[in-house]
Amino acid sequence: MKPLELRVTHKYVGTYQHEDEWKVVGDYGIIQSEKWVKVDQDNFDPTEPVMVHYWVKVTPELGIPEEEVRQALRDSFSHVGCHHEYDCCGCRSFYASTPELLTVGEDCEEWKVTVNSYRNY
Image (cartoon, rainbow, N blue to C red; front, side):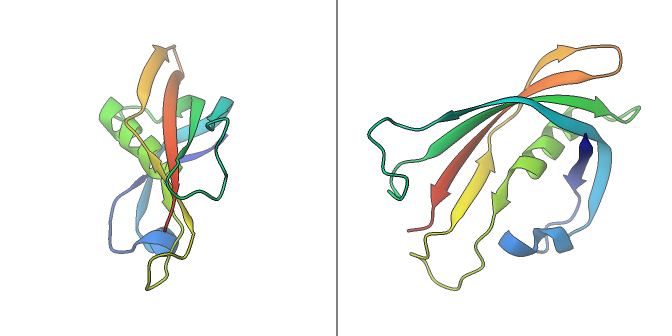
């Protein structure tokens, strides 16, 4: 299990988002993942996204609202790794869509997080 963190400040972009302030709202672990790539897709083709579905077990801290867990999952699975001053560098960025709450147990929840990935061209 890893700490599930909510990004509190948004001063930095891309590679430097770790410099922002983060708040731990629980723990999470990936249960399963499924990658979707078009069969005829070239992995270097910038026009085609790669999508990954993650099923995630979350143990939220006591009293943390569902919306904060949802946003923390978005923050944890979204990564914009590019810090170039120009386009067409080919860096891949990952954007999590709105996570879907699947089940709620006594001490944990199961969520589905879909992450889309694009190259910067």
